[in-house]
Image 1 (spheres, rainbow, N blue to C red):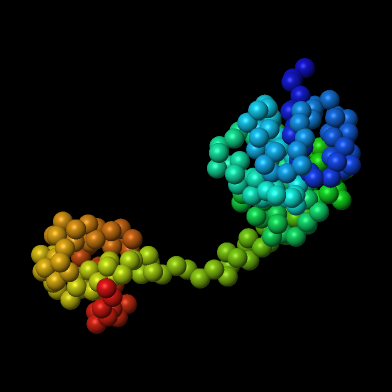
Image 2 (image 1 turned 180 degrees about the vertical axis):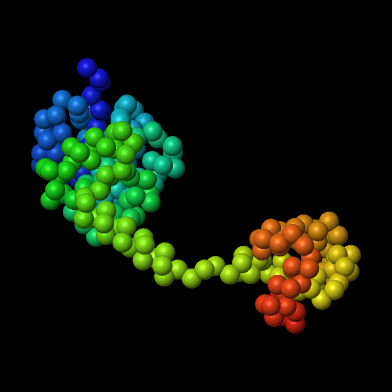
Amino acid sequence: MPEPVRVLLADDHPVLRAGVKYLLQSDPQFVVVAEAADGEAVLHLLEQETVDVLVIDLAMPGMGGLQCIKEIKARGLPVKIVVFSMYGDEQYIKEALRAGALAYVEKEAVDTELLAAVRAASAGRFYLHQGHMQNLLSALLLDKEQADPLDPYQLLSAREREVLRLIARGYSLTEIAELLSLSVKTVETYKSRIMQKLGFCKKSQLIEYALAQGVLGVREM
């Protein structure tokens, strides 16, 4: 029989922790090895205990759950994270996932979903309620449709735009270096970066692009 999944349970309400602990340990696959009431205690326990999955609330005194998750990732602590929270808004879910959580369960659904969420997280898989999953996917697709395509010109720094302008006006790299008080090597580096960012391989393409952008008379230092 495989070793049980070792769980650290973090919530500032002792009664709720007791109920969740009972629920988890009703399945022989899980064992709660430690409990915490705030983020600082979680970090301390993770340094002391071998923990496979952290089940953590977002709203706790002191260091809250979201900040704690970010700190766990910053320290490189090897624990899978399941958030269980009273908040069901998609923004909370997105922030938790961005911070590093693998699963998110609302407290009102803990009795029906927590075991599945911990099981999924322990295996390195994401887990969300089906409704939240659909909403997040819909929002992602909408954001993609509404996003304006990025103008490559916006990728250029002010100095790169100035070098582009001078190249397009017919100045040699040596002349540009003198005008901008730079070394020729530095100007060559700027030119290479510009070509790479704009996706060009020929000087003629740079000139055509500059003409199309109408930047020949614009000085940006």
